Figure 1 (tube, rainbow, N blue to C red):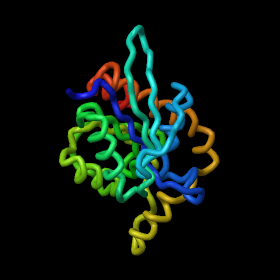
Figure 2 (cartoon, one colour):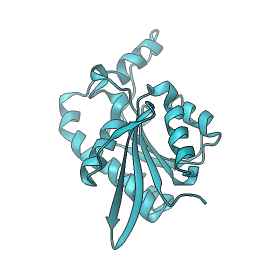
Figure 3 (cartoon, rainbow, N blue to C red):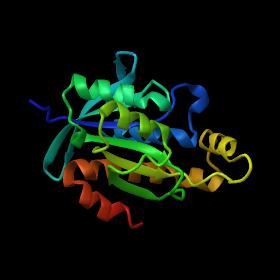
Length: 199
């Protein structure tokens, strides 16, 4: 029997040197959800920090797991697939939160399926789950300078921090990302898209 749990996975890279970088937006958003719903994390098979909680909104409740993969971004799928298999959570009940360079800072796009858009964490999850039919909350971080060193610029950009004005907006942005994940779980993908994608 499939589980009635949801799995929310916030993507990032483990370790001090990655804390507070653009590529760790998913981790930061997972931390917001953990605080909001009193979730404490413990180790899942060395693949992820995993916690369990219950959300209550508008009279309804949803049970969920919250994961922060420890596998580094490029192998995020190992963690997500392991948790999904272990707790029998189908792809339709998985929400992945990640940074997205195709969106300006502060923009959120909710989607399911579609291309990984060059995001190695998403490519890894598509591969490991064997499907892309899970929901994604894409948090815009803006784009690196293009040019001769585009690849290195991109790496430096996603592993870089936020500027002053972005830091001021970051808490609200992460709270919106957490709201988007909750909206998917309670009201469905379309409702979340209507609420967040147009902003």
